Length: 103
Image (cartoon, rainbow, N blue to C red; front, side, top):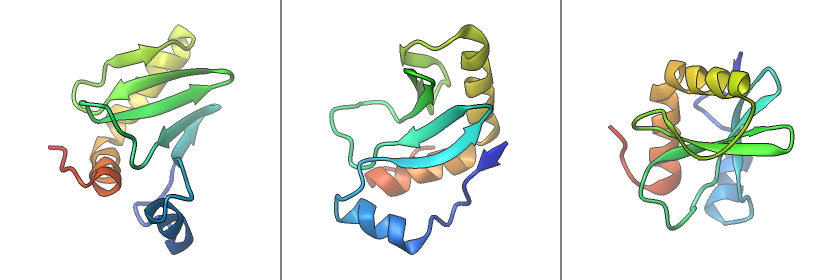
């Protein structure tokens, strides 16, 4: 169950801050990829994008409910459980990437 360390390397941070990077993969589990889109606009709720094969969902970092998209039910449960387990780090990432603190 890989979670990329809270200290994303300097090169990735530089690309995020300069707008050269449109997403940051923060973890992977059983083929499920967990991704933030730094500087993503137009969303009211802190969330994480989850990709599995050709499908994608967004998971709320507040309620941990799926707020958009669809992936197979078993993978959806695994993704939600993974997010709950890593919620403190994921909320820190959201706060860092969006200059918004998530409690």
